[in-house]
Length: 500
Image (cartoon, rainbow, N blue to C red):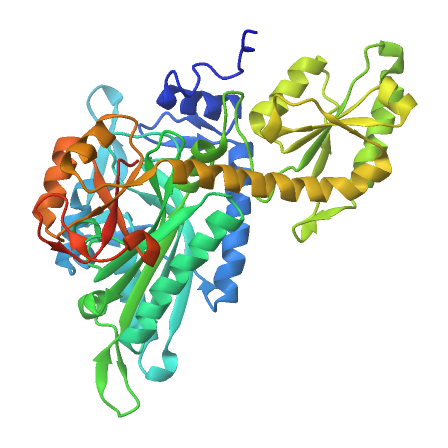
């Protein structure tokens, strides 16, 4: 029997990058912008981001953080204070040098009014926030200072892909100052696990938490921690990062405080962030060749009701009944919030209407027509099981069953992603096998490494493979061994992969 034609062309197997772009367009998540490397986030895509914001913002506040807002522009001399930071971001910075437009030759507008000092459009905000923190902090009584901001940043990327890597993107950035090194380290790791719990519990994507190698650290950080997930093309995506900054930025920004002994010392800092890249990861982790697939806990809508009237004279009756069902089911709750239900009364053909919601990834679809009204049983479709026939329920059964089905879908998507990662993760102890692994389909390779950055750089240049993290999971790291590349002692395995 021939396979049915899928809604997304090309399929994942045929061309994964093109498939990703097609899902974006079909689900109406984003559109291209007139500005190179930027994107327009459409309402459906932004609704997903808003839900991510809502969940994370609640967790940040539960862990004692407050929201604030800091300027988009950073004076150049602020940025120059932390040498490693400057070096790490210099090539990605957008720079404002003029403050107005003037008419030039042939009436064209040209920049006028040179600034006394160039302004950097923030690629991240450590330096501007550090300057303000220095004014806010004077005593140990002012610590810890726990601040988060939701904003946009600009990094002048050469190769862009919507949500995954764009010139401008949305994110949150947490910035904190502590009285001791131990408190700051605890904060950095605590926030990393806030991210991991979010991506696993809400986005249904299994991520591996760990420490970045020295060459992959955030510019100016002492330690960088990250969560890494596997996408369906077996590449890694970095879901969020958290940085222990030591006293580097405090020294650069003169953030000092009087301790309990009356002595002045520099504060200990952290910063941490997650971006709209998570939307890209959500697409690539779960979606299929019919479009977007959304875990119920992050879906802006949980259920869409589709009135179907083949007889035009019955349309009003069907729509009226469907709206009543919508109102009835909207009183239900799921995952601690009101069930989000919509009744689609657009003047479209049934198939067109149905497929528009399939491509948007709605977890459940309920069809209502005259036959269903007469029988009292209604066809409920699961998005995660496209090739299975719908289940038929009475209205009373639906009220009990819908929250249960949504939890089943959430868990099924997580387990499917976890199984895929396990099937494509391998311990490798042979250089030949390592090369073959990444010359083929690839995945996650757990290998011994002697901590030499030169080896790391060579692997990246020759195979496009990087150390994604040094896993916290002791089972993944295993016992000490011998470096795959040199035979020298290795304290444990690290995670190698190709990545976005």
